[in-house]
Image (cartoon, rainbow, N blue to C red):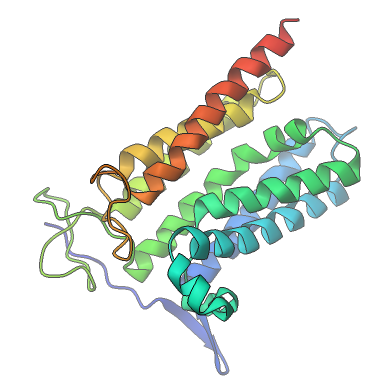
Length: 261
């Protein structure tokens, strides 16, 4: 069993304001995405200018924050949303959903693409290789907070989390950090370096993230307010990932059929 490296979730204070590591991870994610987006933009300078990239990152940030918060309250805390709707705005209480953030970013990209007169799929293909950076850092933030830990385990690398009870658990945040972050970024970055049919990069993002998330949920403790939501073994994360996998497969088929006609 490994020792959980307890870290103060608060990185530092700015007067009365406490700056949390989780928030810093979000800022780092957007910052790194911006830098890499500028690098990718150099490959197609006729389409992507610095100002265009900056606008894109802004749209994505708004989509992530609003979509992530609304998605969490809608998917995971529906009863609180209905009884105390003002909790939606209490973001300092925590609670962000990837699937909600994905929907938020999708809407933001549709608006961005229309404003710029660009194809939505072209914009999505440009963005999705950058997404795993934020996913990776977000899971690091979860690990520092000692939240979203895994199921009870006897594995030699299992950890005792401060809020996880008296039994060692899978450090599932680190599993997700590696597969949904490092592995997904590497695959998408290398795949997108060559010309692909429009929508193919986005398709692989949906498929791979969906498969990784669905698989890793078997190691993650189900959300206590929900438990298993289907067939006594499927979690909300798995239920929300299935449409991603199906949509990714459909998009991949359409992308390649369209490119061959």
